[in-house]
Length: 105
Image (tube, rainbow, N blue to C red; front, side, top):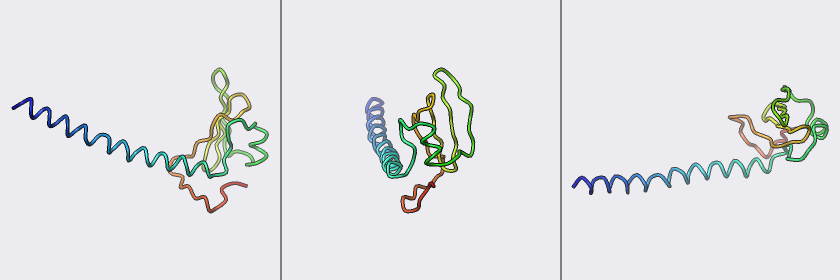
């Protein structure tokens, strides 16, 4: 009897786990798709290109580590550089993605 109950609990638990994971993945994938449509700095751009296209950052953090990683913060996102080249851009938490309005200069 105990084995049967444990087996049912395991089956029930395993059945719920994929549903929760799938829903979380869908939300993350949709955010990635939406951010791809936004006008953000992309991997490989130089600091000079980013500043020319998006203006001065709100905050600039000093380089840390080896290789040196620099962070520039804008109103809705931050861009990370290795040396003077963009590694990636990250939206700030809570930013609502709206592809209809221009986000940058």
